Image (cartoon, rainbow, N blue to C red; front, top):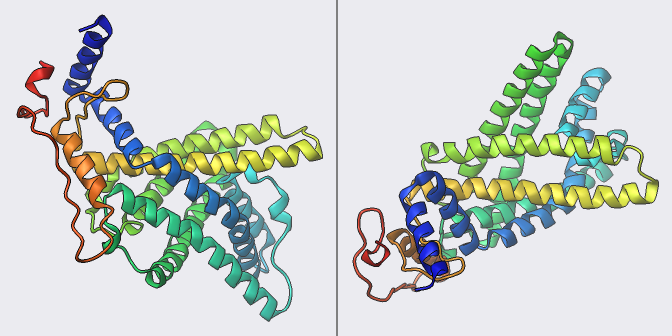
Length: 333
């Protein structure tokens, strides 16, 4: 065996023995098996085209509800757009207008477009959790469920926005209030991700199995918000009209794509932790003997393709020496 081969196997044994390295590598491996990048791209595609119509609906409804309170309306809208810092200031000055019929049609079309991102998110979560196609809702029920999720999570986002706007009332108090505001924002994001992970999955999953991913997603999403705010404040402030528009579109699409990646990786962490799908063999360059977690993860991946009630997908592996409690084969010792 070459020096590279010995070193490669030594690294594989090391990461299987140490959870701080083996667990994130197992998440990366399962994310690659599930084609997570393509799932994130699908969510980003629908999210990009549904975001602006949904924000228009949000601003329009807010204008009706808070008609006599423009200061509160501006504060809430400003905080909501702070959740998506790459959007810029343009949407603050626009809303859906017209007679009652035209306004109703506009809101209905925007909500229909917004369902696309929730359909994509449902499909992604079911994919990560290994829910076979035959156990997923039919197209009609899926769209009805997506509409309910849009209203539920949309209301939750609105509630988190109001909480964040309350925190900004005392911003003149200094560092202490900024820390409190950050904690409130983290708590709101944690609750939203926790609920989202549960309601977006067809499979019945315990709430306790979703806390890890919700915490990770809340932290990473908060960092992404700061990054987006810095990008707008430092890179687009003095940009020309043409370049600024182009950068805005690319920046917004990239921001949604990264947010989708963060959400799916956090959800993948829930799956790996809940089902003990680690340690995995580090078979990125050289294929090494499969661990028990490899077999379980790949079996789950194969059974996703069951599409009929009378269809059964069986996954078999070649006979190899039995693995120990850690999932390691004797040949790895």
